Image (tube, each protein chain N blue to C red):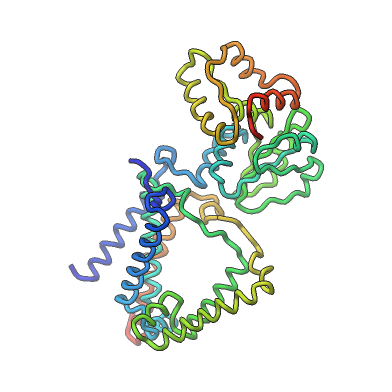
Length: 210
Length: 199
């Protein structure tokens, strides 16, 4: 084969592979992580993100990830998500975030994240993604630090627990199995009861590390 | 198919194995550069006169090969792209670095890699450039406190082109490959024209 023909053959092969790459549309099935994780999350629509997914991003040290805690300084000091930074809602208008950053914003019932999320979302560019943590700070405690598997779990419940359990141990949590279904249902529907200090005390007594 | 790459990141090589593989890849890289004539400053300087665009064609071929390989290995589930290291972008210092690199390339006729190749094959100009490069490294380190501000200016993080423009990896790959193929055709014509032939 002459050099010219070899070059033409290679060019055709490269062109075909590139064309297939451009029309290929199944990153989910192919298991690509990296930047596509943000796109997958964003495509789910409402800007909300589950605590377990945020935990996975933190554990993977996802590039460009920033966690913004809108709660008061006292509760922030008591506990916050690993690596989170506290920002006052009032100063959010002047707050600057960089190209390529992904912001996960969270608060509690006193400092809801939804208005701040909407504001940041409006200011973001296509390279910046803004999410709010579903259930706020308490969801982190409930779903990551203290995941529970009820007695006689369904396949779906077991899968959800197995996803959370390794993450929970990584962050110093204490997963529980065989929890009475009534307690599990109560937690699933209403989250943690009581105020934050009571919840933290209860969890630390069980050995959770923060 | 199970993900089993990058080998080093997944612990399949270990630290010592990683060094051995780096040495083997480095030797192979140098050998192919030398066999491709990249240790010859006249050949590389032909790039700037339009008479020999081998460097352009070789580097663009490497870019296209690597992009296609990484993309399809990732899509086939062999490679976890999120574990492939991305050097962070710093706009200003990298522009300045590129400028210094380009000026040095034009003046010396060799870049850092090819100067090592030239030196190892006994070329005096390659040896002089390697010494100059090492002196530059020394100078930069000594002057670092003075330039530290510029060195870390305008950070953009580990950003990719698909991330920046909000398009898929596949689309960007397609555009780059098209540019490469068009560039190869144009390069062939420029070479003929610059050597005084008819296009």
